[in-house]
Image 1: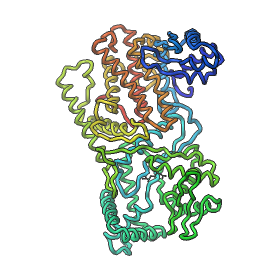
Image 2: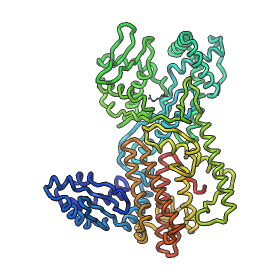
Image 3: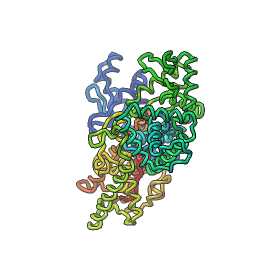
Image 4: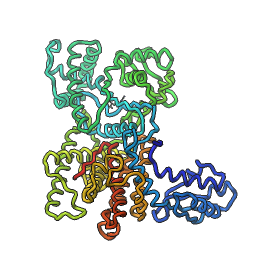
Length: 621
Ligand code: ARG
């Protein structure tokens, strides 16, 4: 298989070859002059000639007409019109339809996961992705969702593009939050010297205690801080009681995390908590002192990297001789490189942490770790809940599980509502997305819709943008939402079923007897502008995947999927209303066959794009 299945790029390459024969302009320059005309009826792609004309010393309008003639010689071009200094180019619609559907079907032959959005640029390369990484002693909170959803989507995307991916959860199981909780537990059990184990506490209970401890700390900072410090000291000196309690907290936390992650179908290769680097971080700090990258504060003995070249100073070991979050991160990076020899290691956190990450990456390079050039911070914007920060002070936060339950319930209501109205109606072409009435299947569909809606809402916006989360909006069947895309898939399944096509075969294996195998000749019949729009949107999905990869931003892929959904909706709606000549289930057998092939390709593209984003497509909804 080529680097990726990418019909539009193939068309552009052919066009550029034709244009290059007409001038001495490099292929790269020609490529960068291509743009998309403002309206579909003006063409599929345009070339601006001013710049070239100037450097060649010719009249731009004249160059445009020479280019239009040259473009016509490319087989993928149906028409090229010079318009002033521009050339507007129309692709051969039938050929693009044929190549695009062919590429979608060919994607079943890829040895990479990811189907139509698979690619090979990552072959032989390894990436470590550190994402979600919440602090222990709390349930996964709603504000963790964004990093969790984006990180999981990137992990799937990298895998689909051929990378070997390691998913790590850098659990915050050390430091002040743990110390506070240990202090609070000691209050519950004043005889802290007793070696009797405390009973295991639920994450809910731990969270409550943590919130109380935070409030106490605000009221009496001196007393609580010093007590917490005492516990951290006990923990770091392997005090048995401190260790037992710490273990109880970590076990309780990870059990609860695993449940929530598996509900989201997200898995980590490993939890590697901060505690793992507690001691090692001190040795690493000393080695940075030895290379001259870090210094020891003569007054209090702390170890720090001084500010340099606009980078923030970093404290690695504090005045109590305890490693810091930053110090542990450096030790963790060294271990990761040792264990995985990654080409890249990315850290997903809110954009606010970007400065500290960039500072420690730079410090590591100064210290001589050349591979640290492969470290990068991928920041995401803030999510607000009802206009407020989703994260509240004092550690009290909205639990993610509660939001997922609510999303499930709303999806259930929606699907049940549709069921009732479908029962009431006589099934017509647009209302036959039959829902299975089996309770269990209904619950599964509601879960796919609810979870899908929530995850999609997190990746749809540009990664660094702040946004307001609105559950009603996220689970709505209207707008830029997962349920709307999922509904497109289900509608297509219902059309295929109506046509007597074996859905399983059409959407899961190469060809499927009813849907035409390699190079089916009827595809070239798809030349209506509305069909062309669907074809183009599908053909552009691999470009969207590449863009998402290059910018570590899955929202580009979400845009691509939404564009296919829009195009399909206009096409199908037109066919059901004013343009009956566009009905998918046309009378003419060849046309019907071609349109069914387009329908199946649309469903596959949408499904493969959504899968990367963590959204499943039920066949009925
Ligand atoms: N636990 C941190 C937080 O909740 C995120 C950790 C990110 N990963 C890392 N290696 N520092 O903000």
